[in-house]
Figure 1 (cartoon, rainbow, N blue to C red):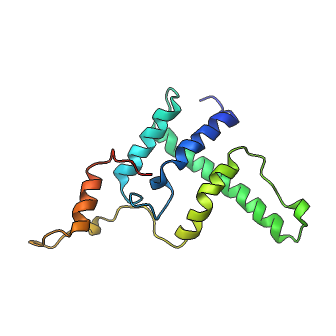
Figure 2: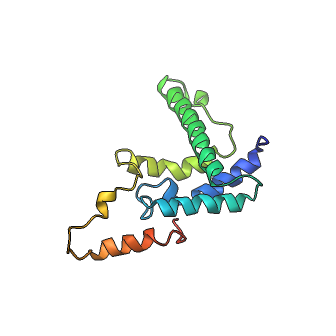
Figure 3: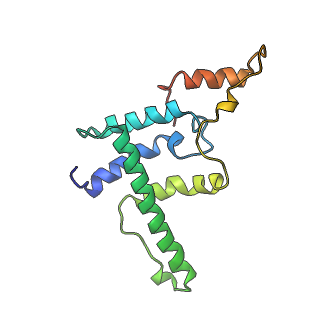
Length: 150
């Protein structure tokens, strides 16, 4: 695949942050794999790049989050070093601020939360037990992955 321009990556980040179920642990559809899969497909479609499917979207997100974490670490280290405000590291990546604005609040909320892996035990019921309203609603969401996640 051809190296992306800053503008293409910026567009990708814009599409990514539209889908909170991919990064916000407090989003209602965060734990629903079907919703996350649908979000990946929608990002792929929005990017309209031949050969860039949901697997490539997933990989790109992981790579961007890795780069984001490296840049955030540089900022943190430069502020800890006792440097003056003029010496604080400022990322030169065009999309950094956009992603930072979206992830910053979420990171604080989700830091100690669990993973986004679906727990099958949440959906298991005792024999003869009627599912609760929340279980029926969550089941409906799982069976309707096309619903927008964020």
